[in-house]
Length: 371
Image 1 (cartoon, rainbow, N blue to C red):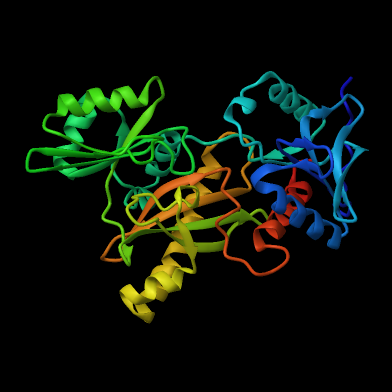
Image 2 (cartoon, rainbow, N blue to C red):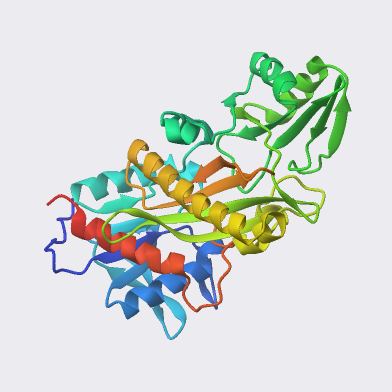
C-alpha cells in the first residue's frame, strides 16, 4: 500500500520529520547520538512556530504512517504519526544510505510526494568536480586528483606537501600529510589509529606504506595549502549554510577551528577547538583586513553551496563548507559536507540558529515544491 500525499495548499503547515539512528535506552528513552541535543532544539523551535516535528528511524516506517518520537515534559516518547511532508535526513551511516530499507523509504517518499533533503553523503571527489566546473570557484580550489602512484609522483615534487584523504571520509579521520624536502619524504599518519610520523627516502617506500594503510578505499591527493596558524595551531573555518524559506542559500554561522597542538587537522573530533572568526583573524590581519576576509568567507561559502546543491543529485538544504586562509589572506575551499557536525557551533542560546534554519528550510521546501 502506498500512502497518499498529505495535501499541499500554500496556507497549510508542513509536518516535518527528522530521520536518525536511535539507540533505545530503558530508563532515559531513545539516544539520537551526536545530534540528540540538536533534535531537541529543532523540536522546540518547530513547536514555537506552530509546526509538528517528530524524530524517526527507518524501522519506524509502516504502510499507514510512522512510529516516531515526540518530546513530552522533556522526555522523548514513541507515538504513531502521519507521513511527513518534509524529511531532514541525518543518518550518520553511509552503509545505511545504500541499504534496502533506505532505498524502500526513498521510493515511498517519491510516490507520497514527501520532500527528503540531504538524502545522502557527498564524496570529496565529486564535490571537487562540481566546484571545479565553475571558474569563480575553481581558482579557490587546491589542486586535487585521485590517488595513484603516477599522480603522487607528479604532484608531490611540485607542491612540496600534499594531503591524502579518503573520498568518503569525515571528521578528519584517516588523512595522511606528506611533505617532500631535500630528497626526504615525511609522512604524518597521526589521523590513523595507532599510527604516527614516519620518514622515507624513496617514493617507492612511501607508496607501499601508504597503500598498506589505504587498503581498498578510494582516496584523493590534495595540494597542501600553508594555512594560517594561531599560537602554533593550524586554523581553518567552518561555514554553515542553509536554504531559507525562499530556498535561497545563506550563511547561518561561521566559526574558526584550531587544531590540537601537534596535529594538522582542525576537526573537533580530532581534538580541535572552535572560536569566533574575528578572534582568529584580528591578531593576524588587523581589524579592517579581518572584516574583509570574513565577508569574503561567507560569500565564497554561499557560492559553493549554490553550486553543489545545483549539481548534486536530490535535494540539498544544508551544507558545511570548510575554507582555509593562507598567510596572504587568500581563501581555499577544502571540503563541502552534506552532514555537518553539530558540535562545532559557538552558541549560548537555547535554540541554535542552525536548528531554526532547518525548520525554515523545511517550510521553504514545502511551500515551493511543484504541485
